[in-house]
Image 1 (tube, rainbow, N blue to C red):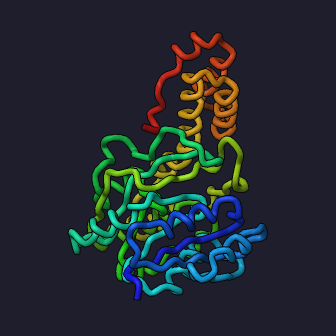
Image 2 (image 1 turned 180 degrees about the horizontal axis):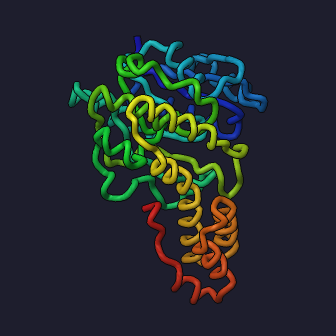
Length: 311
């Protein structure tokens, strides 16, 4: 029986799934099984998964959403530990070894997570990480997680199956992307502390730039569901968490644009700022940044600062 089950939900991820699976197969920690769940894909995802026959386990189901796909992968596996890898992300070779070692050092910990490096939708480096600022470099208390959005990405997590089952898995009321992971981490934190690794061991793909890999995210309904669930369980407001979540794409796009300006790539900067404006048309700063792309290079580089959202 493998010690860890790696769950990879796949929905219309033909262009990225192979890289994710290869990164799981390349782990230095080998006491693991890999379960890929094809959640009703309509592209060539099934053909991509078929190339790994014999090396991974495959589950096929009609489209039921990300939460249901992850839960199906957990049910198909047998590991006492669970690792979640989204089909557009990738692990560094030491990810499993480091996170599992962190759990082994402290049996009280129900979940360990690593830091993530942000890459563009085409896989190119952006020189940024999802760190959440210095105040969020430590494993959070439940109260902190109810006040601030903590930088815990699904692809950066390994958790104990016992905790996952006590929570009841990912809430399948969440059909699409958004908030299903935040709610799971809140529920898990009720059961015990987390372990945080400082190393960036995950490549998290920002799917909105330079080309969009996925359709438009419909997170408003998910945010409303998240608000209801949190109020029912903890009687706490979630407006601050929702605002942070909604600001994240705009902030990443702002960082991309500022970096492009410093490097003299004004066309890339212009595309990033224009897309940031579409996310938040009332934010004046992005219009001013877009205007910088029309200035001479030396002046534009002098005016471009660092985004606070990415490090």
